[in-house]
Image 1 (cartoon, rainbow, N blue to C red):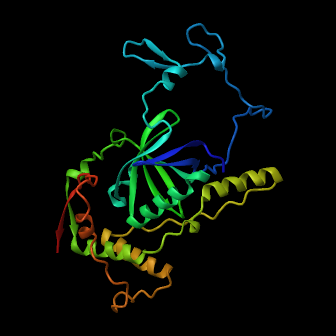
Image 2 (image 1 turned 60 degrees about the vertical axis):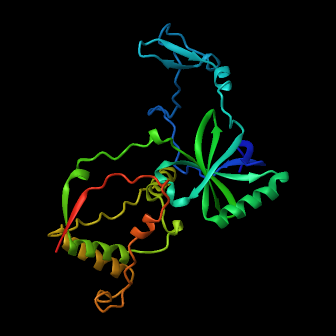
Image 3 (image 1 turned 30 degrees about the vertical axis):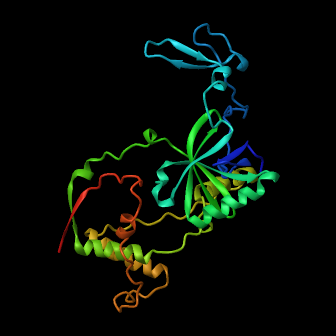
Length: 301
């Protein structure tokens, strides 16, 4: 991997020099726009809408359009002079419980590697943070943009996850949240049973990008001049008579897919019901993100 940024973690009076690496990469199949007749690559010219002249890349600047239609032109020097106190630092602001940070805020993940002289303080902060079970809230500037981020430990290294600002996250505003939707006790019990029957340990290696694999197969077949094997079409599923019947059928299907006997739960040997997570949520600190409004549901026998 090649580092994309160099700076330092600022933790109190301790400074830890680090390098930043992108933790993820795109594996999508890449395409080019081409002329259908001869396969020639398509190119675009940068043309000014005022004088119609082609503009060299070196003459292109960023412009901010005012409500009046006038354009304010900004230069590289304008961006270089932005008052970013953390331009080359990852400033630790506070430490919080991991559950307090809603994953909806996360934007992109990076690995942090210490420079040779920063290895010991890096390991010290890493071990202390991992022992605490918390994450650090930090502020960092990447590519001329300052953002909040979290700093956590994964597989022995710091992972920096940049975050959206609060005003960049939309609030869920849907009519059903205000509706008085009735949920029967039997339906809730069966839905809980379905969740329990589908429990498991998350292993990302068990999943694959079926679309990318199919697309690559099409390309390979095209190169080799052979026909593409089409997958068999799935039969249409019969709609369940009602929600409870659909839930019950789903539970049975989940048990069969795991090699369990359908009557295991009825005999009392099934997976014991877990305690509700409400207690855990209630124990969260007062600084936790406020939950969005939920629809009012009524239980009936």
